[in-house]
Image 1 (cartoon, helix red, strand yellow):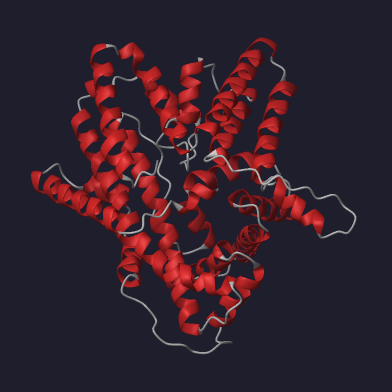
Image 2 (spheres, one colour; image 1 turned 30 degrees about the vertical axis):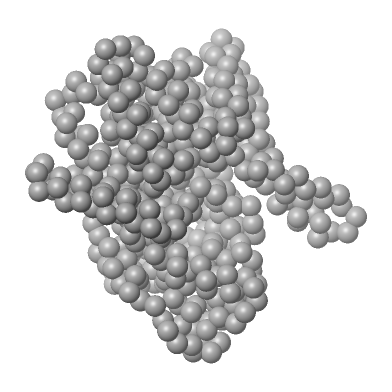
Length: 457
């Protein structure tokens, strides 16, 4: 179920919170099993047929971790990581590679058209992080309930954030409602949930009405005017931010309601003054994963400049492929890799970069790259780019009303996490949040309720 749905907000969440409070109050030993059951029920609501896959994934990886404790066989962990990635490849990339093979006459290219299990990219990476750290001797053993909850905890299972075991496992042992700041944390969790809903429903979804028709026209082979191209590109630039950061705020807020603090994932990325700064602010937990488990594994900066250049390009290209099984995603990631390489040489040359110019160049580059991310094909992306550079009719009717407040919130900030933690506990804040929540519920009931963009990854 969607976080921005009546089924979740008015049924699942109140029931889950009520059961969690009762168990935590009267039978705390059952708190973690309850959270695991609630998380599996939440996942099964989407499509119960994928629940056995998630449960088998948890059980098999846990059994492998148990076997490693007895054998200390690094080959066992390596095989498990490869198996996890192969499972991801079968569901997410098999048809993609079959399509590439079809371009060569004579090569067999069967397509299975498998449905993509929700969250498979995220729970696969959680397995990889834990198993890798286990092999390094950094991660301890956990029982099946705790490991299952680490993988399937419902606020994070579908679209992150990517949480390292050391950031969350110790929190499972706490009595969250016995803390001195329990009420404050619960209140801030509600504020974060409301802020995330507002970003998604009031800012992100209206921008979809600006972006979707433009990219649909490009996909259909129509000429996209200059006005349409800039409208669609800017709208998607802010839509994806409010959509994904809104989801993350909801996830962080929901976790706080159950006594768990998840890591931040966004920190006003459109204020970044360089491409490196952007990736330190955008999807921060994925950036950290790519750095620690891929870039460094490929050599990082430890083996000379040529190896570092290769590691940057390969890491970002693979990061693009992780986002979607399409060459446009690979091109999007590779473009960011090339930008990071240019920035690397710029720094090594010692050339200055005024902060304002750095921000402008970074924002423009990121915005232009979002066209590759959103377009369904290179042909559709080219149609948008032609409009952006003026190789199309000027057009009229540029829509800006939803863009203006979105740009102000995204660029000026602050982030929802910072705002919520700066606000003092006060009744008037609670009243405003309650009224905003009711407004959002009316909006959800009236308008088209879009799925979160990152659910497709």
